[in-house]
Image 1: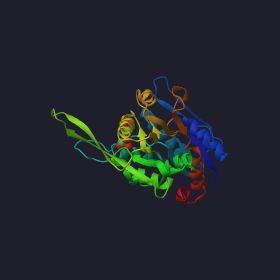
Image 2 (image 1 turned 135 degrees about the vertical axis):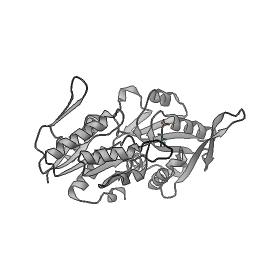
Image 3 (image 1 turned 180 degrees about the vertical axis):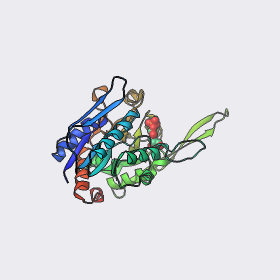
Image 4 (image 1 turned 90 degrees about the vertical axis):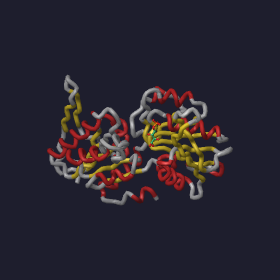
Length: 315
Ligand code: R5P
């Protein structure tokens, strides 16, 4: 089966890097908008019988989801043999269960749409909740950003480091990252809850599980959206005696004035993010560093294409 790689418009740069590593040119595709804004898609070369990987992250706007759905539909109707939706950032993942009345399960709807449109497999990274894999009835290969960050930190002496989960929801993810850095890596957890303060108003109370005094803390999260979570975590760690705080997160959504907040927060020493979501580099300085997931995705695509193990990437 021929290998074909297609880039959606959200992931054009990343797809270009992946195609260069794979030494497979990007498939000739035209994606445009009609004057009223509707998306128009045309695959301009034959994909009949091919093993096609469509690369498109799905951060807001929701048009990005629609764009990959249209690409999948076009490929299905053009008789591609196998279609893999490569979604470095899988959006609409935060509502993943019905934990209160009258809410949607957006992640499940997103998964259903991809399958209906024609995806035979999914390749993604750092899902907001791992169980979202179960929303699909097709194989899902789930990559971890830890691979990329571990490479960045390699060769460091970790004797003075501690890896910190900024909330209890991220403990499992953070523990896995810590273990990948070093077998006996120290870990701390910030436990946030809302309680009634003295005046009766709700206040956010933060408790620390673990020791951070005079330590270099690596705060590890999946998403930075407004930046509030990592900034508050950083301020709290510094108030508890941390020497330095480095923030790592796979998906830089950077909503609103997040970038300026991160840049002006003196307690945040460095922010490391991945290129799962395109960023305009000229909007920030070297305090925010972008690490590329292209080599990892290229290797995963090659392995899927050749029917080889993906789990061995993590060893
Ligand atoms: C929460 O469950 C997530 O893991 C992130 O901590 C959260 O989405 C980050 O959002 P923000 O940057 O707006 O605090």
